[in-house]
Image 1: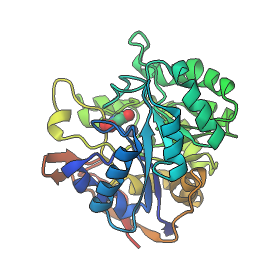
Image 2: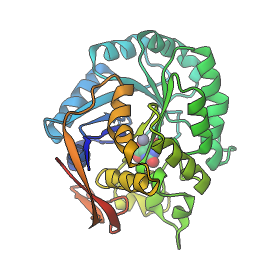
Image 3: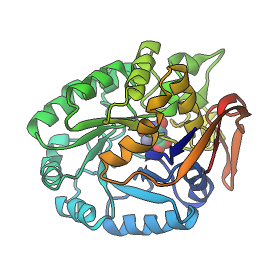
Length: 340
Ligand code: DOR
Ligand code: ZN
């Protein structure tokens, strides 16, 4: 089966030698990707974005297109956010509630304080990508996405009736319902690992740090709702790997990092999920068409080929900083992906 080359609507390419190690793995299967800004320091200015874009270009093949995002902070100026969008330095802004996840310490502590920025974005049609979890430690970690949608994003959409929003890495049936309810201007990305695993994977025979990500894996009923949404063909549901490499030593430790490095195996896994759901007819829409359309980009004219051919995934990626575990590494994948 041939498909247009996928669009990864959410990826962490990191920086430095990790960027050099991982960018080719996104570019191998994907024509383009929306690159997250949670670097240290984060991508908060046009100058930082331009320099990062140049480093990505050095790390990835010429044909690969990186679309950047700007990291919203409490003090960020609306003028800078909009100017970078108009000039093409970035295509969206990313909202991390402060301390919600990796490198989110500079994130937003008061969303109401950000209203002037969000109003300016709505005016120019610039989309807002949200890490949709509340950070209140009294809220159960499995409920943080649903509570965010209900108490923060719902009211925000009412305040800003034209703002376009992407619920990033959606993980719950509640998110599927929420996004469907606001389908005229709200979209969602879904990862391969949230389509593949439920939260039992975290405790499969023992504690599994390599299945730990944020938002954390949810129930089987949530996974099933995500599969139904992804395979529905709906235009506002698309592929975003959230591939997030961390060194094995930083995962297998007392307080391990959140993130699953999935770029080498995500496309094959999604194909397997769609095949299991008898929905291969909608695979190209999810992987390659809906994401770029939502961001106003053309879909790729190039193709990948998927063959039903059992393939053993490599267990790890060696990087100059140390090894990184690969999602489903060592397992047999039912599909093989080739680059044309
Ligand atoms: O699991 C995650 N890892 N979730 C995020 O939101 C951030 C990411 C990372 O940067 O490691
Ligand atoms: Zn992410």
